[in-house]
Image 1 (tube, one colour):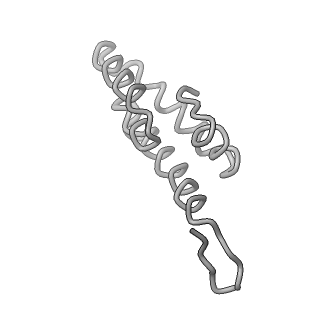
Image 2: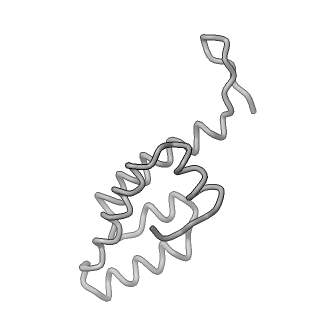
Length: 93
């Protein structure tokens, strides 16, 4: 679905939603990385459950994985993020 903005330019609404997932997933990965919430936001259910279980088994120590992933998500450009994590479905790092 295309949306015409105030400047007369068209934008693809799917790209808008995917771009906003980068920021949401990145912030959630930094704040709640050990719970794997960011994985569920990106649609990686199996990986989210794995991260949650590993975090409980390791008493939260491996929650560092979420922190690292959050930083990686936020340092990517929107185009890189969409290509790597949305289109190619790369679930880890």
